[in-house]
Image 1 (tube, helix red, strand yellow):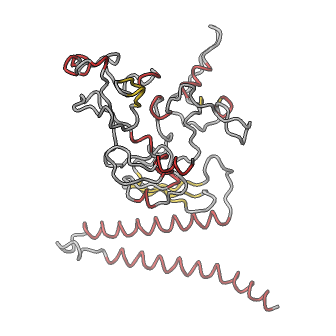
Image 2 (tube, helix red, strand yellow; image 1 turned 90 degrees about the horizontal axis):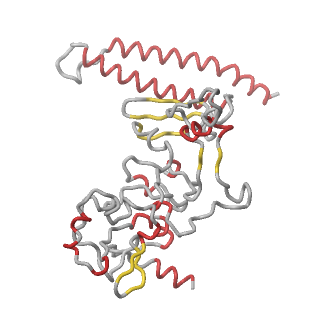
Image 3 (cartoon, helix red, strand yellow; image 1 turned 90 degrees about the vertical axis):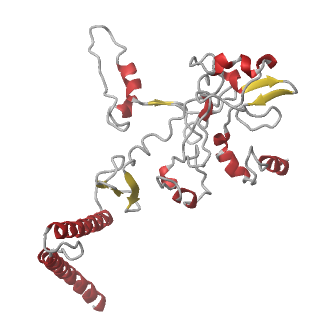
Length: 339
C-alpha cells in the first residue's frame, strides 16, 4: 500500500512532466494551487461576466477572497462527485481566461520559499534563491495549526479590560515580541509532545492552514535581514553574529535570549570579526582618499602612499605588541613542560 501511495504521489502534477520525489512534493505541495472556473448549474461563462469582473468578494469565485468558507474549495460538477480546486485535474479543465482580480498568485518560476524546508534538503536549494538563505533562515519548528497570542495588539486587548477608573496600559505595536512584559503575558495553544503529550488539533473541516488561514510567514526573519546579504554566525554558541549588508555592518554580541557573559572563545571571535571589519574599512578609506587626493587624474595612480604607510606601520606595531603579550605565556608553557 505504501508503494502504491508513493507511486501515486510521484505522478506528474499539472503541466509538470518530471516525476518529483514524494517527500519533496508533499513539502512543496501547497504551491500547486491553481484557479478553476466553476460551472454553476451548467451556466455558460458569458452569462457570469458580472461576477468575474466585479470587485465584490461575495460575487467572486476563488480562494483569494472567500477562503473562510469551507465549502468553496469543493466543487460538484457533471461526471464526478467532487473536484478539488487546490489540485490539478484534467476532467473539467482550467479556466481559459480568468480575470486578473480572480487569479491566485502562483509561483511559476519556483522562486518562493516553501512552507517548511525539509531537513534532507541541503543548502544547494537555497544558494540559487534571491535573497540567498539557508536552513537556518527557515523555521523548522513551524506549526501551521498552532496559534500564538503574544503580539502587541493581543496584549492591548488583554490589558484594557478593566474598570472605568483604571488607566489603560498601551503597548506600542512597534515593540519586539521578546520583551520583559510579554514574557509573562504570552499565551499559546497546546504545544507538542514535549510539553503535554498533545499536539495542536488540525482543522475539523480539513482546511489547509496555508490556504484557508492567512500564512504570514516566519515572523521577522526576512524583514530583519532585508538589507543584509547574509547573517554569519561567527561562534558555535551563537554569541557573536555579524551581518554584512550593502550599506551596513552589524555585529550582534550575546543574543538577548542567552546569558550576558563573554567567555574566552566569544571574545576571540569578536576580536577577529572586529579586526576583519576594520581591515575592510581601512582598505576602503585608502581607496577613497586616493581617488580624492588629486595626485593624478587616473584612479589607479591616486593612492595616498603616506596614509598607506601609516596604516602599514600601525599594523606592524600591533603585531609586535601582540607577540610580546604571547611570548611570556609561551615561555611559561614550554618551561612547565620541560620541568
